[in-house]
Image 1 (cartoon, rainbow, N blue to C red):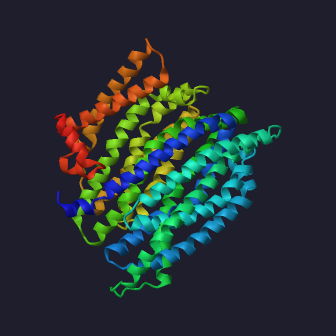
Image 2 (image 1 turned 120 degrees about the vertical axis):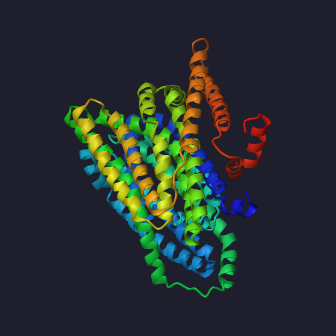
Image 3 (image 1 turned 60 degrees about the horizontal axis):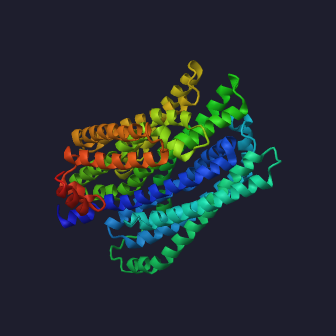
Length: 546
C-alpha cells in the first residue's frame, strides 16, 4: 500500500483513537455506575435512566447532530481548500448551537414537571429533579458539539477523545459524591430516589463543563492557524451566511430525525412497559426496578462495544465525504469495506464474550444485586452489538454520500417494527422486561438491513462475506469455547469469580486474534491500516499466524 493511500485512509487510525477513548469512557462509566447504582438503588436507577432518555432526546433535537453535520460540511470544504468558508461555517454553527441549546435547556428545565406527570402515567415520582439538573448540560454540550465537529472535520479525533475522557473522569467522581450527599440530605423525603438520581446527573453537568474548558483551550491555541489559512485562501469562494445556515439545517435535520427516532424508542419502551405491566398488576416499584435492571445490567453493558461502532462512524463520515466529493469510487468502496470489517472484527467477539460470561461479569460488577436475571438479558440480547455495528457504519456512509434522508426513513420503519414487536410480546406473553431486549435487537437489525440495501443501490460497493462475516464468526465460536472452558472448568475447583473472569477474557483475546489471523480475516495491507498495524504484522508473523 502506498504512503499516499495510507495517509488518505487514516480514518481507521483516527477512528481507533476515538474508539479507544470511547471505550475508556464507557469503562469509567460502568465503574462509577456500580457504586452509584448501589447508593441510589434500583428505583433510583429507574428514574435516572428515564431522565437520561428524555435528556438524550432534547440533546439530539438541539445539538447532538452538530459534530457530525459540521464535520461533514467542513470536510467537503477542506478537500476543496476553501479555508475561508470553514471559518464561516464555524461562526454560524456556534450561533446555531447557542440558540438551539438555549431553547432546549429552557424546555427541559421548565417542562420537567410535565415530563414527570406524563411518562408512564406519572409512575416515576421525583423525575423532575434530575431533569432540572440536566437542563444546563444541554446548553454546554451544544457548544462542545461545534468545537468537536470542527476538529473532526479537519481530520483529527484527538481533541474529541481527550475531552471525552476528562468529561467522564469528572463525571464519575461528582456523580458518586453528589448522589451520596443528596441521598443523605433527603433521606426522609418521599422523593428520595429522585434526589439520588439528581445527584448522579450532577456529575454529567460538571463533566460537560470540564470537557468544554479543554476544548476551548485547544481552540484558543488553534485559532491563529484557522485565521491564517483563511487569509491565504486563494479559491475565491465565499459562501453567504444565509447559505451556510441553510446547509447546517439541511445537514443537521436528517441526522437529528434519525437519532431522535432511535432515542424515542427508549422512551416509548419505558412508557409502554410501565403502562402495560401496571395494567397487569405490576406495582410502580416493580416497574421502576425492572427498567433499572434493564438499563444498568443490559443496556449499560452493551453500550461499551457499541461505543466503538459509534466512534468509527464519526471517523468514517469525513473520509467518505472526501472520496465522494472528488468522485473516487474505488476509494469510497475501500473505506466502506474496511470500516465494516473493522467494526465487525470487534463486534462479533464482544457479542460472544458477553453471551458466555454474562452472569460472571455482572456478578463481578454487581455482587449484591440480581446478576442472574441481568445475565439472562445480556445473553439473549448481546447479538444487538453486531447489528448496531452494521447499522451505525452504514448509516454514516449514506450520510456521507448525501443520502441524508434514507437513514431517517430506515430508522422510522425500524421503530415501527420495534414497537409492534414489543407491544405484541408484552400483550401476548409473560416475557416482561425481556420484551424490551428483543425490541432492542430488532431495531438495529432492520435499520442495518435497509441501510445496506440502499448502499447497494446508490454505490458500486458489493459486500464480501467470507472474511468480513465468516472469519470473525468462526473465530468467535472457537473463542467462546475457550472462554467457557477456562471459566467454568476452573470455577468448579477454584471459585474466585473476578480472577476467573479476567483469565477467561485474556484467553478469549489471545484465541480470537490467533484464529482471526490463521483464517485470513485481513490482509497485511489492511492490518497496516489498523492502530499499531506494523507491530501487529510483525508479532503475527513472528508466531507464523500470517
